[in-house]
Length: 85
Image 1 (spheres, one colour):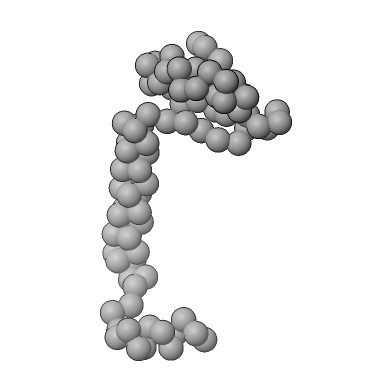
Image 2 (cartoon, helix red, strand yellow):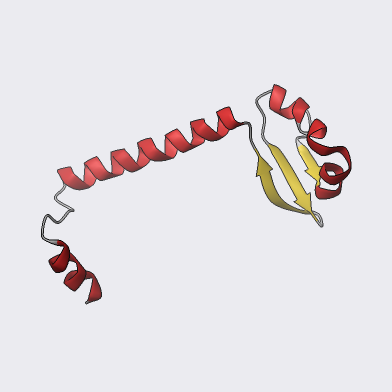
């Protein structure tokens, strides 16, 4: 497996062409700044997949909250009063 870590300077000097080999393999690219992992570059396909996973997880959590009675169905005014307490 290729080392999918680059430096910020590599990205600055070589541009997106340094990222393409990783993207072609479906890998993220980790960008290091001053030796520390700071950023991740993803293909839009991988980003959309991760976002879909996040939304699916949120939906499952919401459904579980409803099943267990962890929700309120009162008015907006009552909700605001409750959260201000």
